[in-house]
Image (cartoon, rainbow, N blue to C red; front, side, top):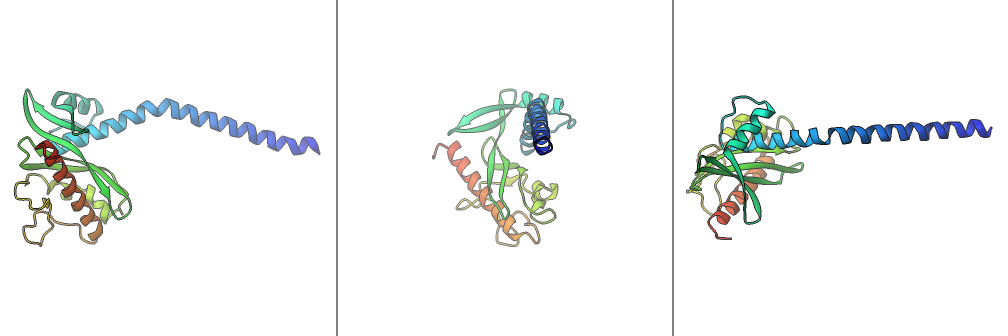
Amino acid sequence: MKKSFGFPILFMVIITAFFTFLLAFLNYKTTDIISYNQETAIRRTILYVLDIDLPSQEPEVIEEVFNKYIVEEEVGGETVYVAKDGEEVKGYAFPIGGGALWGTVQGYAAVSEDLSTLLGIDFISHSETPGLGGRISEDWFKEQFRGLDLTIGKNGEYIIYRPAPNGNVDAIAGATQTSKAVSDFINKDIDEFLSRMRGEN
């Protein structure tokens, strides 16, 4: 009786230890790959918001183009990605993000060197509903932010949804709360970034 009772416990201990070791080993072996993929995704996003063309989506190409044009700098304690063509600055990319309907949205925005134009936005993570708020990741939504004039923004309102007066982008139909949350944090983060760059903070 003692042997038959102890065997299943010993068996479970061995099986648990085996799979724990296996998962730890796989995690160790894939950590560098996961980190590289995440870094590649961020580099792709930064190049996208700065409107820098990629000849392909291969990680090696993304890394090569990124290293050719992008320099990291610290502005007000925040990492800013500066796009340069030789010695000439073309624009700045910086993180944006905030709470939306179902969780936090994180991404990047970019502005021109003279801080007058929004070059683009992109999102690297969100948990919004696919087909509704999740459409913030679709090209039609993101592309309408390219080339927006930031000099006409009053009281920190650079993004205004149509049909409101001075509206410059379209909200997502059926996703009012996500759309509002996105415009709120984009406006806030752009305003704070422009203030830092102008030395106002």
